[in-house]
Image: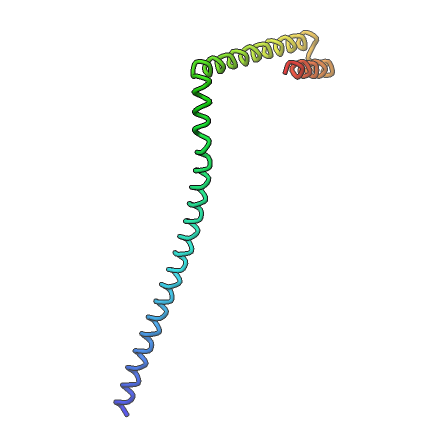
Amino acid sequence: MTEQKERFLQAEELANRLATQLQELKHKIDTHEESISSLNEARITITSLASEIAEMTQGIPLVISKLSEIGTPTIIESVDASRREIEKLLGTDIARTKHFLRIAITLGAANLFGFLVLLVLTILVFMQLR
């Protein structure tokens, strides 16, 4: 009986090792499936991104053509003219704001109603300028 018992214990030990190996194999398969899923998601995202980039680049030749037609000097001149106009408007707005604030202080800023009226008038003047 001792021999049968020993053979049974060996079989049980072998069965336990097989069960452990099967669990490890299942874990590896699950991990492999998760990796495949992640790679598929990445592939889909990259494919979509590549399509969007390809779509965006299709318009580049037209933009380059139009910029060439307009010419660099014309573009720079237009940008400079816009900058000068903005500086002029800002300078005018700042000067008007200072003027209205001087009037408010002269009339006495303690008179809150008068100050608010001047503030509203200032805002209205700026809105008409734009």
